[in-house]
Length: 388
Ligand code: IDP
Ligand code: MG
Image (cartoon, rainbow, N blue to C red; front, side):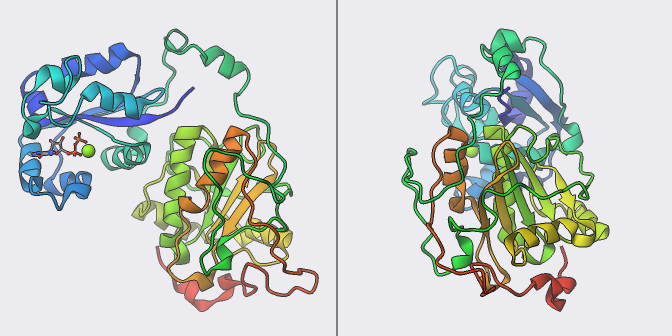
């Protein structure tokens, strides 16, 4: 089933004016599934974080004052296109422009008292859900009327609609909606070449990984278990470089239904636990750590080079590597973000050929440094000393 989730909030005026039932009733009647709900009085700081992108606006102080007038009802609703449809149901930001039939169009007048909030994109929805709810407040259950709300639910359950995996990219001509734009920056570590030694290989054994208990709603299906999978490998010494990728795959899990996981290549449990405690990255994917670096070593053996971080792997439903991108310790403050792999994931899920950077022109037989650095950065003191 479509798993898109959106964060909907009834603001203090909606609560005070007795409109909670009316607003919830509309989402319920529409057919969306309620995943989380609470009446809560957030702090000023919390509201400032929620509206952080509006900080520079003249109306920001007034907005925060308004949001502090009383408790709000925070909710998560789930269903097909929940984010976009939720916004349509809310109506335009300014009620003067909201059409009749929408919540704002029917129930309020002034932009500074517009009674409700709804996430404006899947990305902000994920951020907002993580800001307002702990994982254990998000309820996993089956909506009894699913088959009466969605036409394809039964068919989808019988046979997943994802396309068969295309062959690993050679010098494939991209034919998806957008042109594939090979990465042209100065860091060759960012690109994956068609002669990357790991392409077309099966995912190494990962049974030694240990899950970091975090209560994610999303159970990891496992590489090669019938769903395409994204894996982001990262570690404390390259965390900010990896967080955009981790957040992006978290959103893909919700939007595209592909399986995703994060692999913390700090080999100590206490480091992995610290990551979870500090919660520095808003993500909703299962996380693992790698005792004894067995998995890291297996990936390195496959590459004939040390694994560098962060690394991003895309596997087909049978667990074959179809795309990989990596940074190395040499790339300074470069970030592995979705602009570097969004095309590939979408092309792959749509069954279109992947884009390719072509061959690297680097011979690996004489173990000359390839597109990844030869030095194993894990062996350095700087990495040992890094903290979450
Ligand atoms: P949205 O709630 O429709 O996403 P945003 O532009 O994100 O709209 O603004 C957040 C909230 O800030 C609005 O819902 C509204 O309460 C308030 N707001 C936006 N523009 C104005 C304004 O011009 N004056 C006063 N408040 C505003
Ligand atoms: Mg907004």
